[in-house]
Amino acid sequence: MDSWDQATLALQLLAIDPALGGITIRARTGPVRDALLALVDPRTKRIHPAISDEALFGGLDLSATLTSGHLVEERGLLAKPSPMILSMAERAPVRLAAHLAIALDKNIGHTLIALDEGAEPDESVDPKLAERLAFQVDLSAVSRHQISAEPPCVAGQPPTQCLALPVVPPEVTKQVTQIAAELGIDSLRAPLFALRTARAHAILQNRDTIIKDDVEIACALALAHRATRIPEPKPQEPDAPSPAEAQDKDANDTLDLPDELLLDAVRALLPNDLLDQLATQKARQGRGNGSGAARKGNRRGRPLPSRAGRLSDGARIDIIGTLRAAAPWQTIRRNATGGPGLHIRPADFRIKRFEEKSDRLLIFTVDASGSAALTRLAEAKGAVELLLAQAYARRDHVALIAFRGVGAELLLPPTRSLVQTKRRLAGLPGGGGTPLAAGMRAAFEQAEHAARRGLTPTIAILTDGRANIALDGSADRKQAGMDAQQMARVLRANGTDAIVIDTGNRPEPALRNLAQTLDAAYLPLPRADAARLSRSVATALGD
View 1 (cartoon, rainbow, N blue to C red):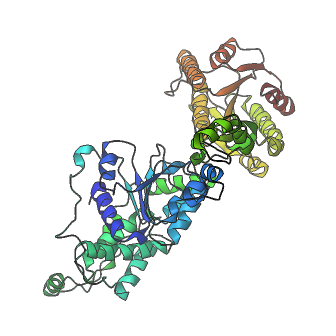
View 2: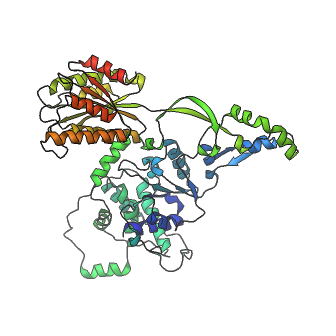
View 3: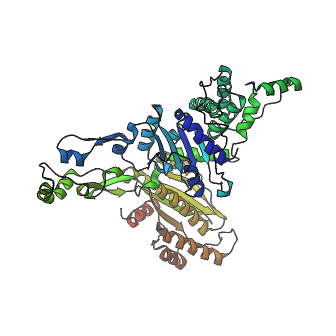
């Protein structure tokens, strides 16, 4: 069963049993996703990551209340059980994910189709919300020529003729739970979803009993994407059933299905890069929910003047500003309507605004080549520790990249932990060539990643300017200089702030030109210690 068939079958099973919670569909906007959503009930409600709590739970209808003179409440989307489609689900903040998870836990008929449009491996749906959705399908590799016009796996008439709900035998419950344990799944929701899926599939096929095909499909749909390890194949049992017995079992279509067959069915759907995906998910969970790209900053600053807006986009109303905007029109509106009271129109609403502020990430990109590498690394280590000592007040984060030999290495991921910094900076290597362009490329990748998380990156390059290793690893001084200039143009086009610190004995013209290309500050500091280096960086940053 390919990804398209899995997705369409999952939608059918979800319509039969809303207690399955929903499905996560990883696909960018395009004809494939549009074709799949065309199979969904057109009355399905659509929500977005910036939806307000009032839109979800309801609240005061301010315009109607002020106009009528008595309290008027507005019902929210979660007031009545219904299917929902969450677009850009990978950008949903923790608040929205928690609200939707609570609504699904109530098991009153809500279902959710989460559209994961993440472009990077670390951009995905909040894990707490994804855990409450029975299915997950990746349509990224599906082309429009691979999709079928009609939903597959529909046998006979619609499943309304089933006289009774299929009963799940106890041995199947035990078997599915054991399979989940073999796959390293520690959530009890997974086997419960698998059992509900098996029952829904039997109903879909107009059967009042569960057969082995139902169990096999259920394990493949509800367990495969939750696996955290690849189960090892068990040795074959010496006492195999005779051909006649096997034929009788197939003829009767019993539920005597060996665990190995179920594991094989699930193992066939496990991606080849499962371990890499799990590592990416763990790293993402350690950093946050990945929703930083949805906003310009990651914390709120001072208040700004309010402006006209709507109440349904998650904003907060400015009561004083709204009344001030409506006041000049009260005489005209009373004469037009002939009624007393305060007349407020949606155009009068004023929304509170706040300055968007971002935590800053200082990416130290240090030249670790040559005989003076250990000295420069020691200076960078001291500067990083001094800056981190002030990070709790300024909310700065610090990262360290060392470039030497033929490439660059991230020695310290973005952190504010002084203890972790001292541990990771101990015993840094040095020596070899000077791949300046490789160091700048590694810094650019870290800056891009930080910007998606809502941070403001600044790159501090510490080098003597004698680049002699090109991006392809060749020892070509001329090409190395050209590659460094090209990376400088990329950083400038991306709008990344930078500082170039010349640690050579004499100012290097090539580094001055590099700083001009970067549109960055150029600081010649031939014999700077850690304290002076820290003060220079702070001054250049405007602190």
